[in-house]
Image 1: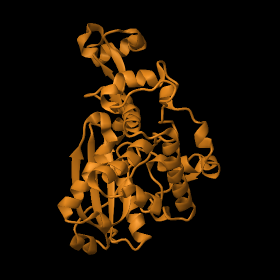
Image 2: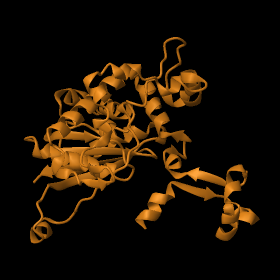
Image 3: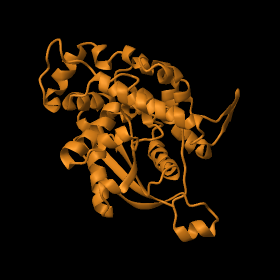
Image 4: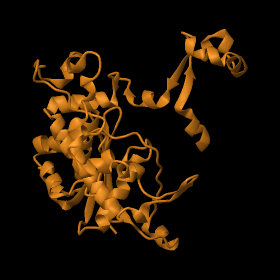
Length: 329
């Protein structure tokens, strides 16, 4: 079953509507003709999953919409991304992640550290490299003006010729990466019965939603709701783990918390209380595993600080946001 899921990166759409591809036997006989068929299409399921069907917006487009709407510049996002890279690199070098790695054997040896950030040490050592990366929507046909033409209703500010610039780059957006995560979620009594070390207690959680075109901002609203569910206040939370699909959406969510809910979460970022051991920009985004990776980072933060509570929050396609509060074990 797991192998079938791995092989499901691509699927064939429309085959049953065409007589010569209506069955698997027929399909196999014309396999090499499929790319030329108009009625039958090979679909990249990963890209399909990263495109919102309601607004017909790719996830990276939602990141740019948020950046433009909130007036976040490429420089703002690059600065944020550098912070994530630096904190992740330092934490890995200090061994903070070691208890939570599962070494993987491969043909050339053993993989026992996160590959992405360790391959980007140049960005950690020379942050000016972020400046050299081009904004994605300044490189495509139509440029940032074309982007505004498509999303002006959602951006809510006018395009200014010669002034408006793209903000999202490949390096202030999270990398698609491979990975997996697992945990035991059980009762305290069962954990003790099984002799398991209790890592943290679940205090509470909540989900919230926003318009899909602002996908990443669902984080802010789910965080507020999680506090309401648990009866905690913002200052009760010692550390925050915010999913960094894009620097724009992570930083944007913190700005929403400040501007709409009156709590200066960006100040907590500057203090080092948000993603203290790096985030998704540096650690990558293995689809289906990031939620638990964020939870593990909450545990790491609780074990390496005096914090009693940690809040983790993630966003997802469709405008969904989810937040989980853990209590120190």
